[in-house]
Image (cartoon, rainbow, N blue to C red; front, side, top):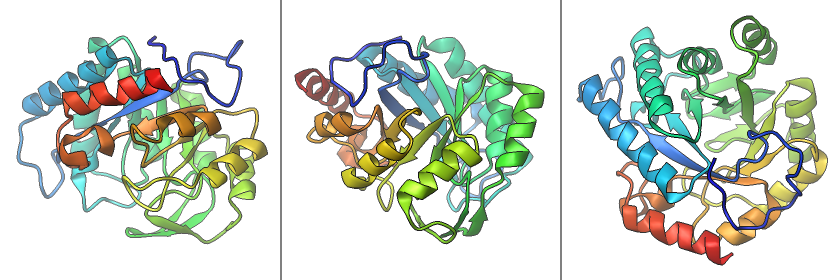
Length: 275
């Protein structure tokens, strides 16, 4: 696993490889089969995703998350079978192509499909946007289903970890507006293995005070900042959180919908080393 030089909020000695993840890069897939915007054959999607995962791994990232970002407008809680099958094939190729930890996020909130993809491909974890509580989102009301997810995980793959958002982006919390209490519920009542704090939307910075409150409320779980981290803010972010999930700032023109920019990836890693 790759190692970085930035200091984090905790001493990672004795933690598992999953708990020690610090730099997590995004592999945003284009529209997949089953999505209204699908325009590429799966073979080309695989080639592009593997190339981006390799770029991040070779740069020094500890992990990548593979996400069906190009499928907007997203299904709320259950994607179609073609999407699940496509993601399983893509993630399998990535797992076999890079020597870093691989995660899966099936947007908008299909945690069971994410678990299925991870279980068959050998991915280590899934990201779940809404694991606990009720949120008003641009896909409508989303309700966490932790019991179903944890029961299914026990049946198919007990090794897959769950990283869950707290007050996820593009959403407003309905059930628990206090982020510290929401974090406790997500970890201890819903079973999240790691917690993610993001900004209001993709590419927008998280409130570091919110990240501090989550880290204090749930001190025994990794806390990751899930959006808006840049070369200028990565040092400060890693001073508050255990890890960062990085996407938009590594892309061409800083836009999440565009491919990775090798120069931006290099500049980001230079900033990490300088932190």
